[in-house]
Length: 226
Image 1 (tube, one colour):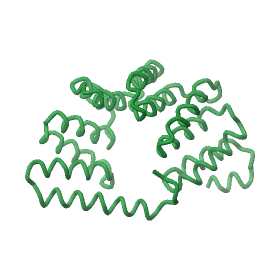
Image 2: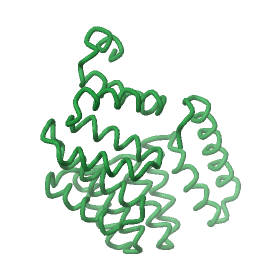
Image 3: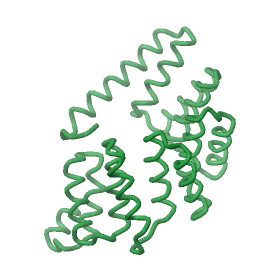
Image 4: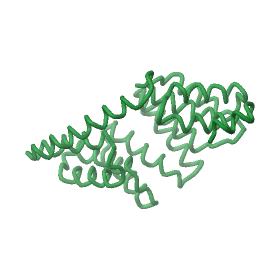
């Protein structure tokens, strides 16, 4: 669809942004090309800059992600403050700068108290800092406000597992897989937890599923991804 739109209107920034967003689960190389075209056409296009930043996060190009996301935050065009602050929080978390990750996560919630991804991502940060009860409080708050996706339950399961609540972690990982049966990380995490409970055959089945899905993913995407 968006290729057709661009063919008719090659200078349409939104077309290049939407094509890039659609390609992120197919080929990061092509996605980056589309998003780079978008921000070349309009260097202040906030959503295009955010999507480019998220792509860089996926590729673990964190310095580039942070730089482009700060450009998005400074932009006044199609401003999405909660989304860009949450994305900055993710990038800083991945660099190990947890103080900055918390600061930008809180800024995302100040911009939009109902931005559920920020609640989940703050929970992840506090799991990383060892503040497990606080992490769980963010996951509970996210669920209470309507979050119900695989990221919520997988990350909550990781926290429960780290706290030694293996049975609870297994429940949460299974909840995650009910939302997305093909989530590789959750199959792996569930396999680890089941193995700790001595459920060897079930653990091996989850590990094999994770490996199979990983091989499918690598076989179906272009090179240049991390």
